[in-house]
Image 1 (cartoon, chains in turn red, cyan):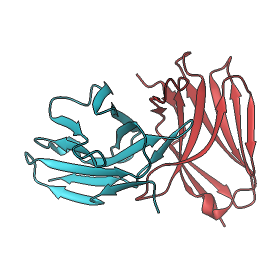
Image 2 (cartoon, one colour):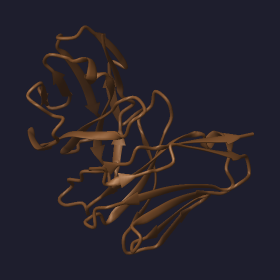
Image 3 (cartoon, rainbow over the protein chains, first blue to last red):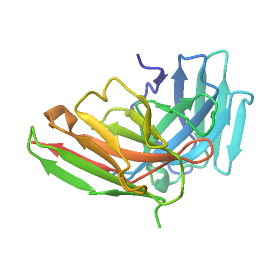
Image 4 (cartoon, rainbow over the protein chains, first blue to last red):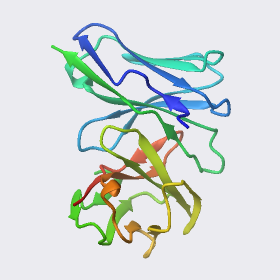
Length: 115
Length: 111
């Protein structure tokens, strides 16, 4: 049962353009969503998150949009830079309870930013 | 300095052998996790560990797997009798706010 889905395994974008990575989820209990970035031979690193009470969160070049009714979120990177080339994982969880938090990951989207 | 250190970075083992993957979380957190990623697939939850006990485990985490925090700092994942399908990247993580801090992973190759 794939509760978090990233239907695009890869994406290529020209440097300076916008990158849009999409994610869908099925579990209505998820109330917090995260994006992780992963380089080869490294662990995933936290990028940006959004609570279900919001529909947008922005951090520099990165913006995450949440559409709860559609159970869909997206990550926008503007402008895209070659250093953004990595695998991006969408992830979801329930609210932190006493410090415990199990995160469910999507399958990842490999972003390539072409100089 | 990384907050979560994993050793070894790469381990090759023969099928049926036991392996121990190690994790050293620097800060004094209570919750620790093991995840794995088979090449090209999603990052999968294996087990969470709280206060020296397993708090939750996935279907993947069968009797071949065990976790320990033997000396209060190191956090280990043991696979008793490795199978070819255990080949994957194994990530240790600790919670930090909303999200995890991951280690850099151990690449396990079972031959």
